[in-house]
Amino acid sequence: MTTSASAPTSASSLPTAAGAGRDRYRATVAAVGCAGVMLPFSVTGAAVALPDMAARLDASTDAAQWMLNAFNITFAALPLAAGALADRLGRRRVLLAGIALVGALSLVVALAPSMAVVDAARAVQGCGAAAVLAAGAAVLAHSTSGRRRRVAFGVLGTSFGTGLAVGPPAAGALVQAGGWRAVFLLVAALAVPAYLCAVRAPESRAPGRAPIDLGGLGCFTAGLAALSFALVRATGAGWTAPGTLLPLAGAALLVAAFAVVELRRAQRAMFDVRLFRRPEFLAVVCQPFTVTLGFVVLLVYLPAYLQGVGGRSVLTSGLLLLPLTVPVLLLPLPAGRLAAAFSVRTVLTGASALIALGALLLVTVRGDAGWAALTVPLLPFGAGVGLAFGVMDDAAVGTVPVERAGAAAGVFNTMRITGESVAVSGAAALLTALTAAHLPGLPGGEAARLAARAVQGQVDPARREALAAGFTGALHVLGVVLAVLSAAGAVLTHRALRERGGRDAKVRRG
Image (cartoon, helix red, strand yellow):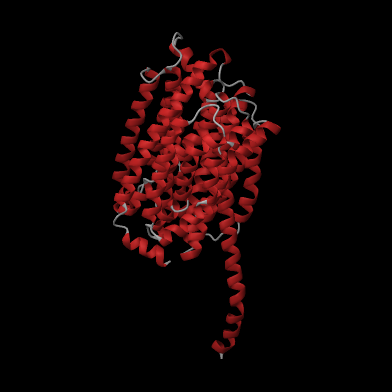
């Protein structure tokens, strides 16, 4: 009697349960997708706003550069800790905290009276961004499977692409209409729908309750900060100055100490070295270095080149980047279908090859280049990044058990954002040094200062010709370096993933 009486109730509740499940799925994807737009815009929008911000706040070159680096350091250093916290405290809870932190600190930046306040707020904002990145991927991995999971991660890739694609032109329009503060007000506004949708996402935790690895976190964060500080110092003091060499040595020692700490903690380590026993995870987790490194460098410094050397407006320089950014908006979802039809190996190898081609073609770029000339290098570059964005996150978390999704997402995103952070500061140092070499007859400090300001989009009219020639040559050298790295990445990815037949078969059947 009890069974027969309860059966109709159970059956009648199925449509409601299914509808609720669909609503939760859509809310989860919408939350992570909206946050996925917010994070890249926090990087690209800030880079576009930097010249106006530095001028209006009367900031030094070093202080202005730290507006980017402060965010990048904490963004790069904390996904591991955020992933561990998400597994321990709740993935949705950490996601909500991260979204709130990014939005609130964007508002603080928008109202900041000085560059010192901006730099401090950006460092805290990077902590929230790390939480969003690690917890968002873990929420998707735990709450979806099969086709829904591929679609969800495709939406995540598309969201990153949207933030990257609309970032430069949108930030340019905002800066021209309302100044640099408008860029950060928009980020704060984007946090509101992201938070409201994330409230409806399902909560999940890992069964373990391991303590947070404070030793590993401290060594890693301090090492990354020391490295970024050394690169920033190199732009003004040179590579051989004590102020550059000492933090470089400190960074090396701290990274070595981090490795020792993690090995001793074994299963309790923040950086879960057991994940690297999986060859496919090792291959995928190294992929960001050949995919996003050059992309972020171009997003940050190519608009400054087009403004300073080319004399373009902020809005025009952003629009000229559309051949680079639009493919990142359009290709992540098709990339997932290509991986299902062929293999992740094929998509990732092809993506790195396209990036290498585009980077090599950067040697054709000139300050007065128009839309057609810029499309030649930027379109293949953007196509490669867009294809990779559609499969990288899913491939990383898909190579480990679902209960380790938070740790896998943390390791993967740490590798990705660390590469981006080092790339932004390292590229600034390289571009500054090469540009300064075209300023003979000036003291080293003065040449470095003028070159650093040019790399930030502020070209001294008295030295315009020399600075333009130096910045153009530096950009060409950077393109060759990126091409070599990306070509090596394509070869290594193809070789490392050759044993992935079983995984690829599962992808095709799913």
